[in-house]
Length: 217
Image 1 (tube, rainbow, N blue to C red):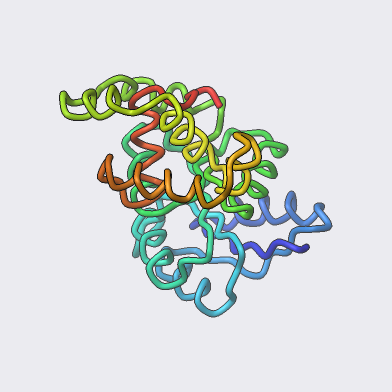
Image 2: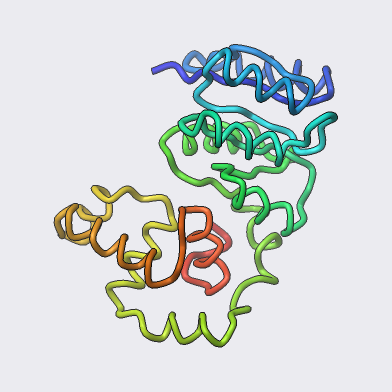
């Protein structure tokens, strides 16, 4: 199945370079380009890409604000941020606004392709080579309330929480743990309510902060 991609970067040469690389892949189709955040939002509505490959530093509307608007307007479109920013604050802001992935511009082409495939499957992709640096300072920095919440989770709940944070679907978790998808869905709903989490981005931040998933990928 062909993946439709919208490229959003304010540098023409960068867009052309990425396009040239991605067009060598038979299952990828570049449906459009955008030079500003506002243009990215408008073209996402008009072209209905599967994935928007988005820079953060853009004029008119930065990539984070553009991502937030895209996820509000077209929630089925996945956004993969491709950026020079290796600051942890940018990573967590990206997750908070609904980005499906975060990869640095220094990544290898093979890793970019892996990230695109992952976000199209509905997974959240954090570049392994950058993740440890990005989130290390956040690991284990829990409040007293959060520490108590973690301590009160059963081993099974921790296991399911970890697998959800790693991007597995209810069916995949059910297959892995030899449980029914309904049981996993019930656990998932209970966990989100108990931990006061509202989406997968919040869950990933929570899991990373408590060391429930490996920051090195």
